[in-house]
Amino acid sequence: MTEDRTGMPRRTPLGWPPGNRRELLVKSLWIGVWLIFLSSPVDDLVGGGHTTGATVAGAVGLAVFVGVYLTLVYRNMGRPFAPRVVLGLGGILGVLACVLAYSLGSAWLGLFVYLSVAWGATLPLRAAYWAIPASGAAMYLIGLRFDEKEARGLLLLVVLIGFAMTGVGQLVRTTIELRKARATVAQLAANEERLRLARDLHDLLGHSLSLITLKSELAGRMLPGHPDKAAQQVADIEQVSRQALVDVREAVTGYRRPRLAAELAGVQVALTAAGVVAEVPAEPELSGVPEESESALAWALREAITNVVRHSGAERCVVQLLRRQTLDGPMLELCVEDNGSGGSGSGPGNGLTGLTERLEKAGGTLEAGRIKHGFRLVARVPTAPTGDVGSGA
Image 1: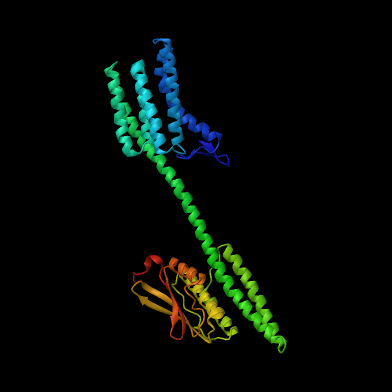
Image 2: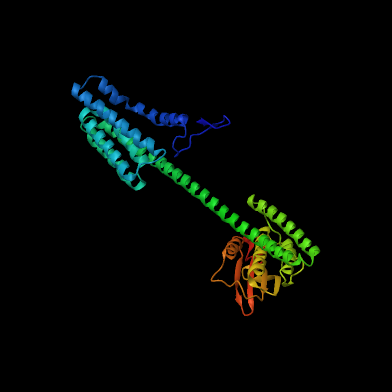
């Protein structure tokens, strides 16, 4: 257990590397406490039942075994080794366990318990299912040389504890994978937020700056002969600029949700200022339309009118808002058609691309392209919640 910034205790997360000295100490104690079962080999060395050379060799071998075991198991609790390194270190443990137990006696058979723990905690499941029984078999065969009864008793412990550790190892690996997946999800969420912000700023600034440019040109032409009308255009420019600033601030903070009724009212002003004859429907009936669908359709209307004003060179623009019953359920359809000849381009621009993504996120579709005498944009969104689309409700 460790403490968070408020002083409340929290658990050291499994599968995470230690984040501070306290977590390092906790994990070291958690792993090191099990070394108490090495008391039999230590007592055997201290008891003096071996020659000086055998005692020194046994002490060195035991120290190497413990060092490799702690390195392998402790590292696996945070940042696992590559599979080749795991196999190499596990092989060293296996060789040391066999050599020490065979050379120094039955007191050293307990090393196979640690070998089984290491195999179970660090190897992939398929490899562990072979390595753990092999460790038990090697321990039993060596134990027959000294004490068959003790070897038989240890055999069950070696196998059971090894397979139990496979669950712990799998839990650690799953935790590490979840940690990586969470980091990936966070990165994707950040990228999506950046794309959303880019789309919003394009839609907001493209519409507002186009209107400001248009009114500035009108004011410049009116200034010599009609200064009063030019002053009105300048007042409109100030109002649009202030609203654009508010919209940008709302978009940055994530609160911008345009309303379809407000956008329809602005369409009449924008088209009239551009010298385009406009046919715009009255305030729509939006009962039952999800907020996300209304917002997506409002963005579609704004982008369509911005393109008409900036690129089309149209003299007439018709905006229609219809409810339709389709195989996918009830839909609200927005159609913007103009008789302009410009803005065909070689493909969809950033505005239409972002608009398509926005509509798809709301469960809608976008169709845009040249027609016989102009350009048409059709956007559709479901009028029922996404989960109810197609139910006929």
